Amino acid sequence: MNPHIETGLAFLLFLPWFAILGALYCMFPRQPRTALRGLADAAVLIAAAVLSIVAMRWGIGAAAGKGGHLWPQILATLLAYGVFMAVVCVALVVRSRLLRLQNP
Image 1 (spheres, rainbow, N blue to C red):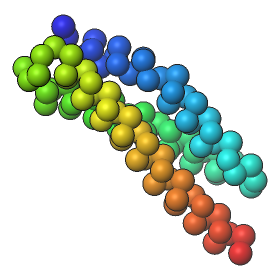
Image 2 (tube, rainbow, N blue to C red):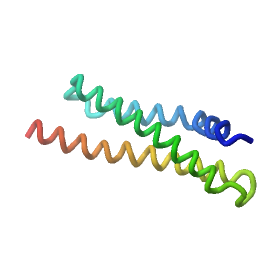
Image 3 (tube, rainbow, N blue to C red):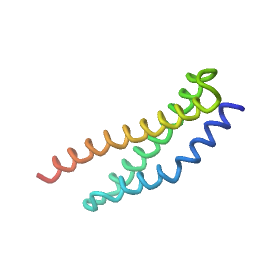
């Protein structure tokens, strides 16, 4: 199967979970809600999705021909989820520190 099709299918399987995590990231903390924060949150989620797709494609390529037909898809989805969570967690820590600096 074409790696781009496999990547697309794997990303579609995780899209609902990424949407839930992204919504929770944007909703909390509830205040302050500014336009700049909205743009920053959107940029973080776009970066997380793009890097997740990159990691997924790399995982499929790195595992090609190893461990049977299912292993590349498993590795790709694990990498995609890990990268998405890493980006969101780092952004969460950075955002909380910036909000503390703004509101001591």
